Length: 292
Image: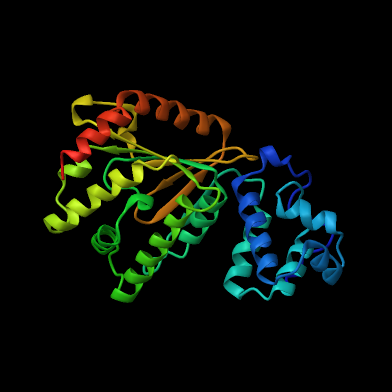
């Protein structure tokens, strides 16, 4: 156990849940998952580690701060690996810092788990994609080709693992309380060849079919729209029922979660412009059907 005094909490005054940083939310999600993996209730864990059940509940919902030695006590109880322990304690020490920047593993992007957890908790995703089809709308064949083309250094087994993970994530769209997805895709994405004609046609038909689901909205941004505020790059706005929104920015080597209110507002304003400039849902459907 690291020599951290019990009198040194990772925050002096943890903000209310509505203001919790992405770091404290990430820590809360992970501790909740670790506890659920044991099959124990919060009360069970509280008794085992000599904490109150209300403290466990507040920590798992990012409503309250927690002393570092209490974090260590929970990690000891859950038997986490050394690597995960270092990561979670780092989150705890810097929980008041806004934003979260993670550098992806060059050979297997384990930080996708961070994205997957936040995605799983979200009620809606607003996804602007200027270069590729959103992962939640990809066919297996398209996903495999994109991961192969962009995943320098990945071997065949790693590619297949990531393809399987991406396909599994699509279950969010068909679960009992389905994720609401609104995707805006640049027309240039469909002008770029990918795979043989059969792969292309199946991918287009898949988007058309998925867009007919009540929880999925797809719009194509026409090239003729010219310059617009999305040209800085792809982004995802994650919406939550009981928490503030987050924004995810990604590139080849890093993922950056934004949680400052003014940053979120900027991307929400950008989204509003893109939504209004893009083809309507009906125009998008006609355009996509014309490609098959």
